[in-house]
Length: 163
Image: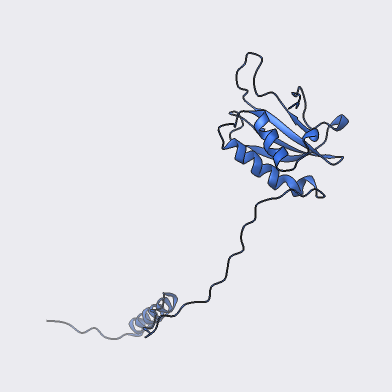
């Protein structure tokens, strides 16, 4: 036999709160789409194409860092990743001034691949675009740095760019 419970004020308040919460949660949920006779299409907008970085001859080193970085990443992803000449040639092909470049050796004195290689492009009178790659570096690193004395970008021995 079922016993009927009395509707006390606390029980009525609990029922009301539960009903209110149910309505709030239902309003937050996804609405069922109304069936329609003909399909509708939402207006679409063309996405802006992502443009590749370009050389900005009159820009700053920071303006040209995206292109320098993209070229560095491209060479790093190739089978020539350990060859300094590949970075210099790719930067030259993109319009950077070969006469303003420096590159460290890509082989040690005992003809082993270096753990880290640097290359640079002197930009203007005060800045340098500098890249570093190699097993000890992990992913390529590119940065804008101030020029050193005598317009150099790299410290230490660099190899001649005579090709």
